[in-house]
Length: 324
Image (cartoon, rainbow, N blue to C red; front, side):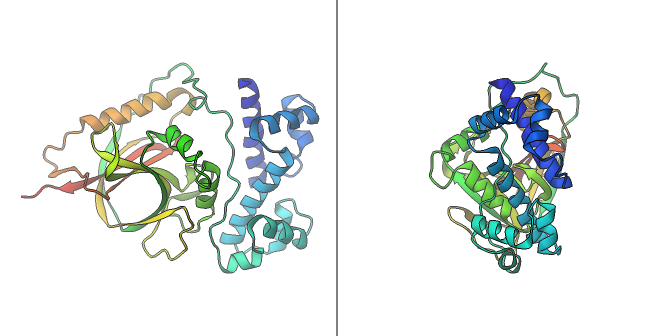
């Protein structure tokens, strides 16, 4: 089963790559099956067994997700977008778009609103599957630590006061109707104007989505010794006027100082755990002597966690100035 999870992951990665480059010849079941060395029938069966949906349905919904972002952010004609994403005509694209999102491309471009997109599935994750690292490669990078002032902004998010860590957060959220990972991440993926959106297509990897911890007296005690509520969401400009789709919450975050703990790019499969340990050790042992500051656990302060192995592992913790 692990080997098939890995094989399906290869197909999923290839699908996103082909959609980005408009490589329609490579984006066929025949081509993808041939890469794995199996028949189309067998590959389709395994894809559905692992992902819970038909290959063609996943491909259609993923293409529409990419197309929606172009409708939202680009000035290209709808016909050009349609043809780029495998639709035979403007009319066919419009029908599929409206069936998926409840509005036509024209209506959506005039007034973008949150909709649930088909985010990329990731069936093979060594940590989620409990396989750990390959070889336990030890990171040799130093942790960069520096103070920053972050301007006022908004934080659109979902909260869970009972969870403990990323995987536990989504395991608990997936039990709540309408608050599961696919729905929440799909909604966040469609939001226009995210401050941290680098155009990525994977959850929490350049798509502007991130974990956060809000200091909360009613929350769970964290490893750093203060009660917090775990959150997942996106940062938005302070003047953001878009709607807040239920069940998401919107918080106004004032301008404030933070202390950043940052590790550079790393190999997720070989270094993830050791990088995590290195960053957490740096946070727990940081010496504030001479800085005139300390960590701020005032209720409502937000700690952000950025996870993107291709670029960094980064905690941004709120601090406050010491009086006198």
